[in-house]
Image (cartoon, rainbow, N blue to C red):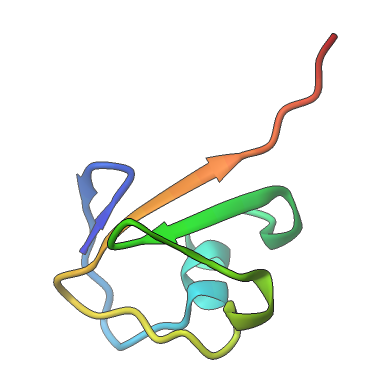
Length: 64
């Protein structure tokens, strides 16, 4: 799969929540898009990622 444009390989299928943890993201501070569709936070624990998925993870940033 590609995460933010970079190829990644995992030993087993993962949910969005598991991938975020493996990649060091806090799931409360990001938005996730899989194959150009936003994944609702309520689906992070159930949405299983596939080998050919294209994933974008966007971190929220504060500022002024």
